[in-house]
Image (cartoon, rainbow, N blue to C red; front, side, top):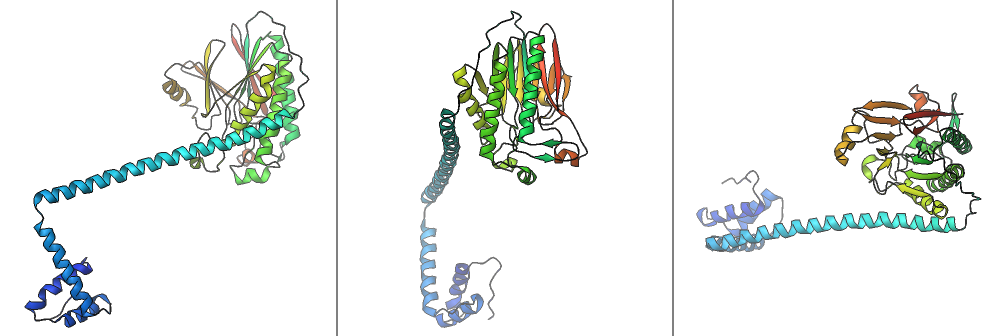
Length: 387
């Protein structure tokens, strides 16, 4: 008689089927061993197959003798095992997220502790507080974004490095102070909208950097601190807002990290620590990437803009915050734009860096421009061009 292994038949099933034919076909265990070895490619003795067959028969007999109640208990037990396994998985996921959060916090706290030491040993500002008040109650917002500090650009329409960055910030400082004096502004909101540093998210950017990321953070933080302090000497009240950009994220891939994993959180902490002794308030976006505040009686949202479509920003923030938004400040695009979206003013700031190599490859060129908005009886927006 010819024996074949059935499709999807396990070794135990094959042994049980052939073993049952032992008496019917007058097969010896030695013959069964020859058949099994031939079908499975083994070289076992008849003793091995005989013992295995005996165990199979005993198991199947015990299974057939189970009553319905026992079978139901076994099913309940299997379900319980599955539920316990699922709960263990949930706990494991929760612990993993908690540990990840603690690692992020620990990393940030370590850098902040180092900054405290650095700031403690820094030379104090030679600072004279401006105490004169005009009595107008006018406010203004100075939008500062896309410094990309640490980046070197050298093309046929633009040159930019750390010294140019500082020079353009000084120009911005002088122009902002001059305009604020003309309008008798009493409170200036300095809104830092992200991409303060060049970062490391693109290989091309890394090649153009001449500072490591931590050095970029420390140097741009001190540069911005000086910028704020010098303005505060000429303006009665200054408040600083700072949010994060996309160039400062820790990971290159967008999906590889969270909003919290961003080097510009360090810049915000530096500004807080450096400016606190001089009574200047710094409000950051904490672990999000936007700030909601009130300026001159208007509800204002500030964000870098890399996650926001221009046509959807108003609707998305209105739904998110469950309230009407008067103005949205954004950067990111390196080009000044402004438009009305259902009574929400969407204001896109320019950049300090001007045209980098990527923009040039797209045949796009914009001047270095930052915006100053004056809130009085009416609102006017100054487009401050920097050389």
